[in-house]
Length: 404
Image 1 (spheres, rainbow, N blue to C red):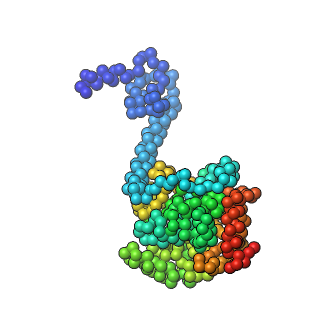
Image 2 (tube, rainbow, N blue to C red):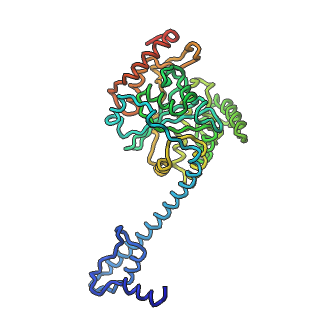
Image 3 (cartoon, one colour):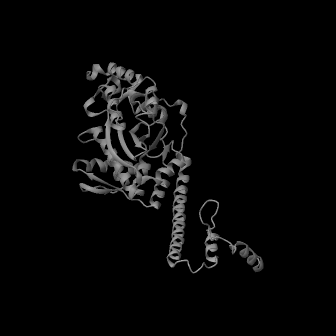
């Protein structure tokens, strides 16, 4: 643009002498860069304009500039997170066939009452280092994360992997067999059918994904007991061999920072008092510690987590949801954790050729408790499907473990 045309352009943009002095705004209601220039070029006001008013205008101008800089900064952060998520999305995203997801009729009614405002996601940890996340591997960890979207409160429930349930095909066995036979879709249907849930989303992670997540966060703080050290080290040695990585043995007891391999080894301990029940508790402890560390993480650290994890997971969550969860991490708090079936209403025993199982002594009562725990529903009546499953479980297990 020539100097002459530029002068003409500036002349056209100057307010006329008859102007009332009202500020010029863009169609979106916010000042753009030229608006700031316009304000600088306005004719001087009459002597009646006070110094106080000029100071207020200057202050407003500075505030707009600061807000603009902050917006650019936040935009850059989100672009960074987006970039890392996109790098892993191709390997981890799967679209479930919603028409194949089973949700009991009673639950569909509850979605508009006691379950309204809650989002339930299935979390699966499989006994695999890399690959084998889709099926043909038993789910070593089965959890339900129930999020109150109004308050940000999250509750975690471990479904013990050896729990004797309907695998969603009217065959009863250890519930971790559902993932091995039909992948996450069958495992979700197993949870929905037996527990009156409405789960439609899941996240599956193997050893590599969990290890890399924790390392990206700089480790997690866990209290290690003396009887856990040898088992923790043995497990992390095996995982390190599979992943072709070196490992650092844990030597001390007490509250301490564990790296990814150490924490993953801790999750797998079952040869102490409490057996598999205690192991499920350890898994919830580690997941809670991960959530606590994520809240302390910088945007760049969260981006690194996305880079490491989403290439090593299998999930139904899409890109927009992932970004939303990352942005809102500080708004979520894990308030309570528990195991299913509850201690007061379960037993263990060898159920014929199906081996050692955890048996819900009364599935109906366990489901009533679950809905009270997750959704504060103290008057829940289990669906006809749960009642049917409860009767079949009792029929198939009573001769081995008795009935209640």
